[in-house]
Image (cartoon, rainbow, N blue to C red; front, side, top):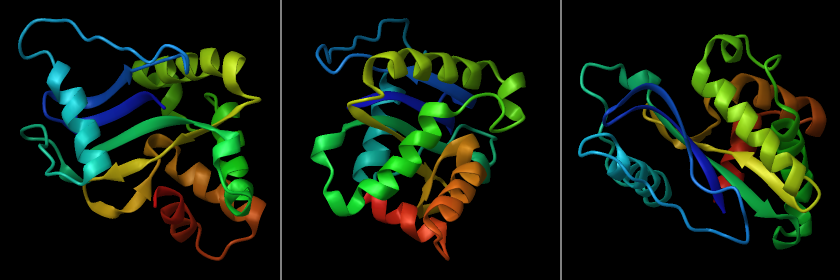
Length: 176
């Protein structure tokens, strides 16, 4: 299930935008209501770009190198093959425990603070039954995995916990 999405420089979403999608594995119905041009379709298009490898529509006059689309997935633990659970556990434990100390930008960014609050509401319901994984792509590296503001910290966490030579390659395996 896709719980939220973090966007940056996609269509009319200049800068970073946190968009809640669903907070219940039992009630997976979301509705976006608003005036024309506020970004309702952009949310669905961003998911289509991320999940189906479609063309990106970068916000006008924004740096492509800063553009990203990162959905936050809730994945039922029993659905993951045993051979992948170690990596999923490390990544998920990182995101379940992520707070303002992970990156200094979180304290000054309203969207990231909203993301942390939303993630914490999910934690109360799903930490024991679901993995939590934020993974997407940035415009400059469409083949690699990207975890938004958390990229550097999660790669370090994976390297330290799993003793892997190249954490970015391991994350790429998660997306497949």
